[in-house]
Image (cartoon, rainbow over all chains, first blue to last red; front, side):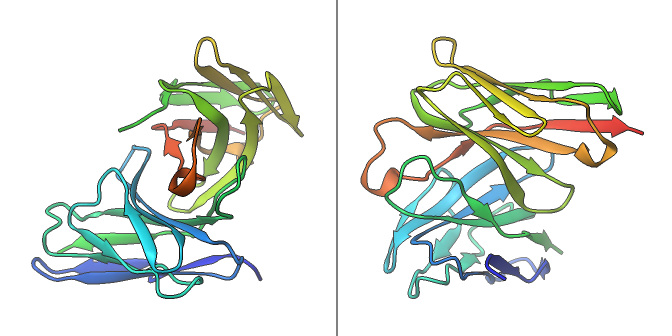
Length: 114
Length: 116
């Protein structure tokens, strides 16, 4: 099946630890995105990438890092510098450099700090 | 920052009734999209309306766009219990180029509950 796969579904992090969230897509999309969702809130953009080996900060990039070494993969690392990491993280993809295109979302990773 | 503001924040109706959700935004857009999210899941795209369109239909969904008022509405007709979900509007910026294509800004969503 074509789509976006996020793993794990649930993740627990101890204080001071870095954790990496996985996002893989087989839709042949150039663009990939990471969003954060807090309870009862909309989505806020963390990082996005339009092409391999290139990415840009979104609205709330502090405390996060990404890499884009392969077209299919866009992992997100939540570092110890992120003071309030407990949230629902959503990865999305879309064809790049095209207007009027929808985004395709994964099923999300729920991160909890313990 | 949040581009879209949605109204109401929560809506509770009976099966068979219509549900209307509204979205307002602040800056010029290329298109506006509506997404649905079931509890604890990812978002699913419902419909996209371009800035030069005023109304669009898809099945039981009807979307309107008023760029002069910077607002949109989503109407779900003959609602079903399975329509229970959160609904988000998202805007794509006008004059997007280079790295801005596809960069969406989401509203805070409307929680719709449809009672059987």
